[in-house]
Length: 566
Image (tube, rainbow, N blue to C red; front, top):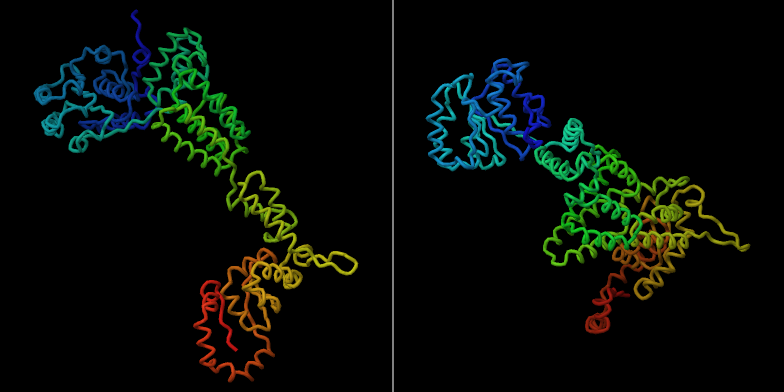
């Protein structure tokens, strides 16, 4: 017998043999069972997924003399004549070569005649979107009210090119891309029937290359068998189809973990020598890190479309990458893919980009840091310096250098700020709030108050130093602290520099506080006694001198000073 390609030899002859389109075959069988047949059907979907095959099976079932469970018997005279393309009742038309209005007029005339032997005259028009606008318009009336013995089946890969007036007169069925595992199982059955040895890795390579089209997968299968014979190995198939080996992608992900920059040049050398396309390599690398993210998030490998041997390797990355890091890597690779298309020296671009990819540092989200702060054993207060010291150690490996630097700096400052006072025997007195109870209280403020005054005096010696040296704490109420001083202008300064004092309280005292100025009783009494004097305006000569003095004006406008009137 003459050789027949696999796509034709193993073409489904029954609804149950159509793979990956169960939602369509079940609907058609139920329509036959309930005698609810439409006069026109529109089959749309990607190439090689079974549109024309399903149309032929439906036409054969409608005219079968001995149907079995609403499936064609493939044994009667009508079934055999349809399979051999000898039936006059099944008319297949190529829409690409019969797209003119004259062909549609001929079709309209032939529709009137009854079928010769079967029950129905079925017109299968493939690539119907290729018909001209005039042809569609001439076909509208016939399509809407055809004779009872006539059924139209349209097949197309571009349904959006079919006019809505045509679509509205048809029952539309959308065919899906066939899943990777379904294609692999189908090819495995064909290989077993043909007595061909093929492994899972090779089947995965062919199925991925076909991109969801079973007909393409069967064509690649024929090509591979012609090259390898009855024993097929994955390396030969990958070399024959010029596919990039998946080991390349795993070497890049391992290099990201190990910071191995040498792997970049080894990979680009292999890509260049094998003649692999750099754009395809970046696309495969994006899919590789997508698979890693899928495993990290779901903790399963069912969503990874790859060979079983590689699925097991993806599990090893489960605890080595975080979701945030994978999103950064994928975002970087997407930009790299777009830029690579407009680069003349793609090899150099890939080397530089992969070096940047490997050099990316790990990041820690605010949620991770907070959760680690709350899970430090033996300490429930997250703001305490002891806690921050432990967190610095625990996130050091998963944080950016800036985060590590800031956290370590806070730890050092808090350690110095919370050092307890020493008595005459040089014995350290621990702060009650942090080392014993873990509660921030007024005693902690008092113990570290002088440190706060010293820091403020040193940093703001000209502006705040003279006013805060006599500032004393009175009471602590939540995150507010009452303070007093002999200088009544301290209240205005605390309001003006509110953010500064809050930051210093967090740095020195261990908690962010709001400073509330409270006047002393003696000061209030003294103010009442001399209120008359204070309310008096200054002498005209002194006020004029202050307003006209350029030095005073500079201090007020440039340095933020205030005029103190006596």
